[in-house]
Every structure is written in C-alpha cells, then in structure tokens.
Length: 105
Image (cartoon, rainbow, N blue to C red):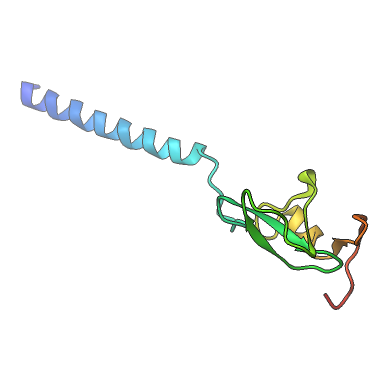
C-alpha cells in the first residue's frame, strides 16, 4: 500500500535526481577544457620577433616593441595546441614574414 508520505518522498527524490542530472549535463555541455590557456582572460598572446617565446598583454594595450601579435587564424589558445606547437618552430621576421625560428631561440 502506497501512503501519501511515501509518494511525497518519491517525488522529492525524483526532483533531486533531475536537478543533479541537469547540473551535470550543463557542466558537460559548457565546453570546459582541461588544457591550460596560453593567456588569462583579458589578455592576448604576443611572440618575440625573430625568435620563439613571448608574453601575454592585457587587452586594450599596444603590442610591445620587439613582439608581434599572432595572425588571427594562427593564434595559440591552449598549451600544446596546433598553433602553440607551430609557433615553437616559427616566428616573424622584422618585415612580418613567417620564417623558421632560429635553432637557439
């Protein structure tokens, strides 16, 4: 025999499980990445001209002298992503041409 109390407990349990499932699904669908970002929010990456290595610059600030901002379609977003790896062996010369980075940079 089902009592009013049992039905109410079952309804609360179902609601709690639905809420937990919804929260879990939301976290999974947000596209969170486990890869480390190249720069923090509010910053963009730049690289040294003629060499590898660079820094992060706050949004709204100019590109520091001696560095370049990556081409928009070739900007690394996360450590060891396609463009991070590419720019470890490439750089721009003083004329803005993509070249192989020197071995010692």
